[in-house]
Length: 300
Image (cartoon, rainbow, N blue to C red):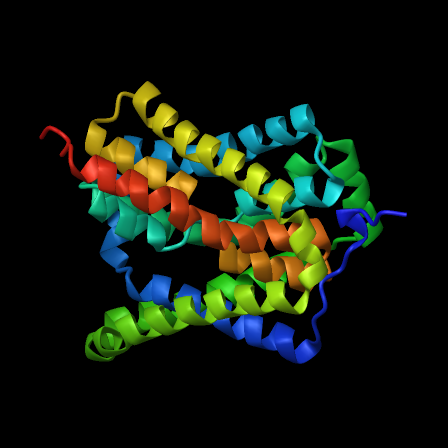
C-alpha cells in the first residue's frame, strides 16, 4: 500500500524544534534591524501604494491560493501548507530584490515593516479563514485540533519579540544595530538553509514527493508575483511601486512558515515540505526576475 504525503510526518525532536525557533528568531531580528520607526511614517506620504501592497498580501494572495487548492485539489496537507505560506509575512529578501530591480525600495521596506506587524494578527486569522473554504484542509485542521490562541502566541514569540528587540536597538543603540545587522542576517540565512537541507536529508522518504510539491510551489509563487503586479497595475501605481508590491507579495517568509509547520502541525509531510521548498524556490524565481527588470529601469 502506497503511503500518502498526508500520512508522512517528518522526524524531529524538541532540541531540533528549539534550534529552528531560534533560527527564525534570528531571521526576524535581521528583518527588524533593517527597519526604522520612520519606515512606518511612509504610510502618510504614500498611503495608496502601502494600502495596495498590504491588501495584495493579506487578501489577494490568500484568496488566489485558496482558489488554486479548490480547483486543483491537492493532498490536504499540501493545500494546508500553501495556505499557511500565503498567510505568513514576507521576508527581507523582498527588500533586496526590489532594490536589485530598481523598484521603490523605501516602499518595500515600509510594507515589510507594516506587514510584519500585521502578521501578528493576520497570520492566524487568514490560516483559519481561508482553510475553511477548502473542505479537506478544514478537516485536517480539525484533526490536528489547531488552537488559534497557541498559533498567535507562537507568532508573537517568533515575530513580535524579535521585532521589538530589533527596533529598540535601531532607535536607541544605532551603533550596535549597525555592527550586528549584517552578521545576524547572514548567519540566520545560512542556518535556515542548513536546517532545510538537513531536514530533507534526515527524511529521505519525503524526497519522492518533491516533484509534486515543487510544481505546486512554482505555480503558487508565479501567481503570487503576478497577482502582486496586477494589483499594483490595477490601482494605477507607477512601475517602481509595482515592482515593490510584486516582490512583497511574491517573497514569503519560509522560516516562519517552517517554524509554524513544526510547532503546530507536528512536521506533517505536505505542510512542512511546502514551507521548506518555498525557502529554495523564491530565490530561483525572484533573482532572475529582479535581474531582468534591472535592465529596464522604471521611468521617473
